Length: 481
Image (cartoon, rainbow, N blue to C red; front, top):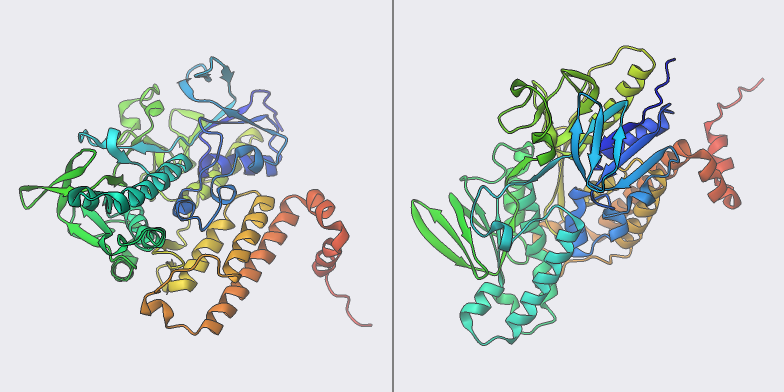
């Protein structure tokens, strides 16, 4: 086996980068592994709504990389990559540090696209990071308090109206979350709950148009109508400007304004600026600037450079979802190790296992392999249990899952005046389903922890006898004489 002395550098610590790093470690990659990201925390984007609502904690949704990377062979660098020289196999960081790499993995994702619309950068609220969730929560609480104190009817209306631009998955999940969350927060203030509005402004005539979640469209529409504050869908409306007190939009070739002091921007992605500086031929990019890659996830002209997730595209495009990114991350790790060992590389095999959506507090939908749809509280439980088991760190998974399970069994996150559709399942049945699912999550977390980090698992649980019990269960039963 040939061993390279140059490190394998991973730029971007999203699902693709984090999974690539962890799988390289677990596969005993012979070179140093360096993971670089400009944030010090990993953001679990599908669960940011739970961070906003308080259903999950920062440790569960927004953990520090230092807490996730339990592998001594991985060095995490909190910095921004400013330049990559593909010819010289070097990169430069904003801090001035420089690295020469043996293999490079690009997982920088995408950034928000404002389409040049005035006011989006200054007054729109993005929702892509933990900082975004914190800022939005603080702003919304302040709006509710100010609305309870003002005597100006116009200002009050703007403070109590939330506009969400875009009706893709992010816009729908945000609208459903706020439709339940805002009236709960408003209970502290007398006389404002009945005036709350959640409005989705969508350019197309339908929600989830052209999205992987379109099979859940009817379910999502019904859920939006059933929130504590029913969500209003403004179809065929295009945002044209945002100011501190209103959103301007066009509809049926007429200009209109919506008084609001909260505009959440969930539409539009553009490639990371770092990709634009890469020296690759024009035909190595698609029209959006994403890198065209081979089925093995390599750049065509640079066999030691791999890419995936939101910043890359195959001839058969994959949706920009977490399940695609983490499977590509594992495939990249396997191919990098194969290349180091002089073995043939394999095309990445990505399996779409269905879709998951948050449709309110303690409400969700799971479309399993486009065949079975589970909704309501059971959909919510399945969605969160699935996501909390995604991270490649079994220790963090187990702790996060156990904390979530405790909250679910004690019913710490509830919605008053739950819609009738969600009350259709008897309470005992819901509790039993929650308990069984929770036990499955906890057991799965323990097994994953033991398999990935046996020494740490045995040390932690030695006093309980659990390692002995699990090891005994692994042994084949002796046949009777």
